[in-house]
Amino acid sequence: MNSDEIEIIEGYRAAVVKTFAEVYAAEAGRFPDGQRLLRRFNEVVEHAMAGSPLSATSEAHNEMCVARALLLNTKPRLSSLAYEPAVPGCAKTIDFCAVSTEGPRMYVDVKTISPVPTDRWKQFEEAQREKWFPDNVHVGLFEDWMGGETWHGWIAGRGRMLEYALELEKKIRESGLNARTDTSIILALCGTGFYWHESQLEDFADFYRRGLHRSDDTFAKMEAHFIDERKIVLERTVTSIAYMERKTRAILPEIMRWNVRGLADPERPF
Image 1 (cartoon, rainbow, N blue to C red):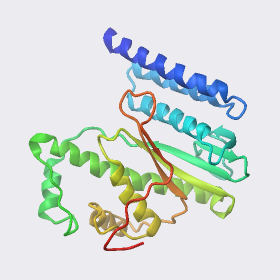
Image 2: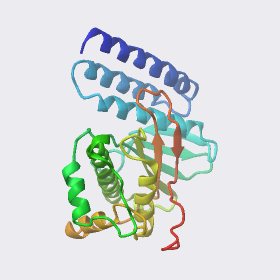
Image 3: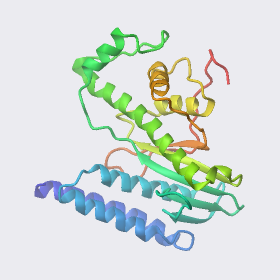
């Protein structure tokens, strides 16, 4: 990493730390783990400047954004927020546990989906030839306009949505959280809005919630085949799926939706 790149990253780090340190200091009573989140961000930036992947920086930054959104939320207002609390019976942690002033508890697991740019044009051509898409769906991509990279971002993003949902379901099952009636569990998926879009998460969220793919879901046939082939059983214990969009190098997110749902499907009414 050359001196110009280091200068850019240091400027980015300073802006991020200033923004979130102010919020966490003001909310230290409710969120004593704020300083731990800031330390983690600084550590991953140091590792990135030493040659580690920059993706870890985005993941740490997105966690801080979600923590800020939880603290600033007023409906319901939180009485406390913990970062990576111990979860009984589970080998892995869930990123946040929030307790509202009204009593109910909420767990939020934060995942960043940022596919590595890869040209998969040949696979897209195969998908067209083999009719991997529903009959009423037309996918218009052009090879010269980053069609292969766009396709990879879409299909890799959708795959991660299923992967992270299954991973969180395992944590819920192992910890016994699915037996609690006073607890909700949210899977917060973060992206930049470039490699994959909010509308694609709406399709997955609707499928996860209903157990039935939308008629206009581009990946319905592919995902159904994958689930059947791997004999995957979705337990649907994740209460809701959230979406956070933060542009590359932006300090704060542009979009934070806590319960993603698509528009009504005219062919398959809810």
